[in-house]
Structure formats: C-alpha cells, structure tokens
Length: 287
Ligand code: CAA
Image 1: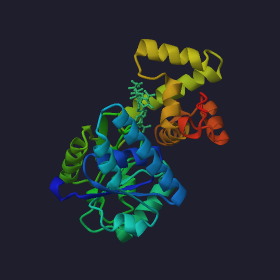
Image 2: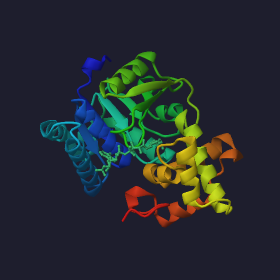
Image 3: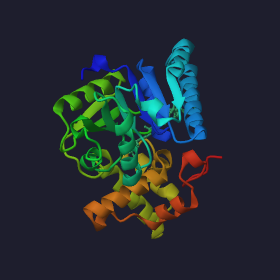
Image 4: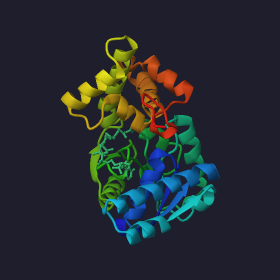
C-alpha cells in the first residue's frame, strides 16, 4: 500500500495513548475512527482530545479553526465493525496484556478490509506473536508512540518476523506525515529500544525507595537534575501510567529473566488502582 491510499485510520482503545494517537492522526488530516469498548471510555478519550486541542490553540500552536477541524475528523465509536470496516490503517492501543490484544486481533480480522495494515502500539509485547493471530502477518508491525503522543517526537516502527519491508516503509512515512520522527527497530525483543532502557530505570528507582535508600522526591530531583530526564523517574511513571510500566516489566521478567523483577512498590500501586495522573494519584497527588 502507498501512503496516499491511507485516508481513514482506526484507533482501537481511547485511553491515554489511544486518544493521543487519534489526535495526532486527526491533526495530520486523517479521518479517525476512535473506538473503545464502552461509550463512557470513548467519550472520555474524545473529551481529552478536545481538551488537548484547546490547550494547543490557547498556546498558539494551532488556530481555533484547525483545532475544530481536527476534532471534527474524529468519530467516537463503540461498534467494532463500524470502526474497522472502512479503515486503511489500524493502530491498536488497548491494554498491555497479550490475551486482550490477541482477542482484539481475532475480532479485527473479521471486519477489516484485506488491504488494511495492522499496527500495534504495544510497549513491549512480541510483534511476531501478535501478528500470528491474524492471517496477514506480513501486513502487521509495531508503531509505538510515546506519552503524551501530541508532544513526543519519537515513534518506534518495529518489525515482526513476517513483516514486509513495504509495510515498515509506509508506516514510517505515515509517522512522518504525522510530524513524528520514526526509528526502525530491527529486532522484535521485549520493550524494543526505549522501554528496554527506560522501564528498568523506573524499576530501579522503585527498588531504591522500597529498600529505604532514598525517597521518591530525592530520586526525582537527582534523576531530573543530573541524568537530565525531562521528568523525574516517578513523575515519568505517573505520566506513563504505573500499570503500563508494571505490565512491561512483568513481560520482560518472564522473557528476559530475574534482572527485570518488578518492584513490589509498583505492584501495590497497581493493586490500589493508584496508577498516576490518569487516576488522580500515583507517586504524587494530582487532585
Ligand atoms: N496536550 C496538550 N497540552 C498538554 C498535554 C497534551 N497531551 N499534556 C500536557 N500539556 C500541557 C500542560 O497542561 C501544561 O499546560 P499549562 O502550561 O497551561 O499548565 C503544558 O503542557 C506543559 O508543557 P511545558 O512545555 O510547559 O512542559 P514541559 O516542558 O515539562 O513538557 C512534556 C511536558 C513534553 C510532557 C515533558 O515533561 C516531557 O518530555 N516529559 C517526558 C515524557 C516522556 O519521556 N514520555 C515517554 C515516556 S515512555 C513511553 O511513553 C513509552 C511507553 O510505552 C511506556
């Protein structure tokens, strides 16, 4: 498929990443079907896009008319078939669980046209394993955005064992069309490049606090000041979603071994439902 043949993009999952990706696609001029399993979830994602576009307009990064036009290009949907049946490109951003994603791909295969490319925004899971649930593994790749998508420049474009080079090429072109900088990831290994480096850093920070070696605030001041991260490790965990980081670690632990054992402090936050900014509380309070 050529880039010019992509008109409609379906984004599955309207959470933190899904709504942000839908916003980026709409800003690039695409018609976007934003789908989630409940009306309430999809409406929340749509409201977040409206908020974000409003912020960009307020800061003169786009005009009110451009913000309105982008929002108009987004169609919030719950029906799976409706979301996918006219899509040329699907970006899946549902929760970071292999079983959930596999169920979504089995369903997607029933509704999507033959030419449609499937791209997963997984943060860590095997592209090859996911692609094998479909009968188009050569039209399947990773397209991994960073949080918040509208502000972050990088997109990892990840090859699976069966992915056609032409699919990687068009996905990179699409990322560029969205104003992003794609980096091709040649090996489908857990966490790809960024999360393989970044998530263990967040985990190590949590182990330091767990063992009483430093406080959350001390670690954050030091990592921000000296390592030069734009946010401290815990601020970043709150931004990304503590559950997302935790699921990435669980997967890396399973596949890569003990060095990636998730810190219990992260597990506690996940059990309590204090997942960071999106729930109003994580390592910091956002209420
Ligand atoms: N849309 C529009 N505006 C937004 C926004 C969004 N999605 N998110 C935040 N803002 C607004 C804030 O409301 C705030 O507005 P006010 O000034 O009106 O209060 C403003 O942006 C803050 O922007 P600034 O430029 O002043 O702040 P900043 O310089 O700190 O930049 C940032 C914010 C770009 C998020 C920066 O802190 C940053 O780069 N943080 C690191 C993020 C990062 O590393 N993300 C990747 C994580 S890893 C990942 O995502 C992968 C994974 O799979 C787990």
